[in-house]
Length: 235
Image (spheres, rainbow, N blue to C red):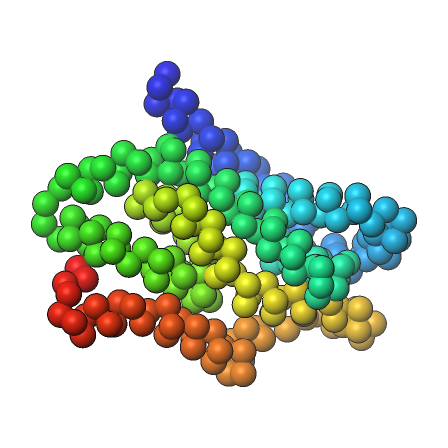
């Protein structure tokens, strides 16, 4: 019973994730947004505060239960609410949703797994200690690097028993560049719809966008480099 209580939230997330993949993967799409854009805009104009609240709640649910459509949700935030305050709504929804997954994984598995890693010997224990000494840098890197899947960046810190406040801070700040980019793309969807085209979601890998992000990554890894230069053993 104790194990069921611990794993219950994580099992619920996995259950809804599977349901979402089966029933929603063809619903939460760019085509669906294009088909319903006029109705969404009309509802926003008639009920702006409620529309904003519903959108944030839906975004939290999509991320928190690992449902398909997180990228479409970010575009929708920009399309409905503009770059500002759309980016704030997107950041709030993504951060809260990610924290739900993190807390479920941390409570269900992370605390016990981290304790076993700390009690172990050899390279695993050294790796765990090295990550613990550089948690801020590692967490920021996972958020800033586009190659790290969002779900992995939510679960891995939980399995390493990262403190919740560090996770929330690094998530909220670390996803700002990506949120700004995709919210901006969403804010320009009106013209994309008018041309009958699809948005360019690969814009984040363009040199003029990726360059500054890699610069932030370099800043995040700088403390680790400094410790290495000072001959402090990182791992």
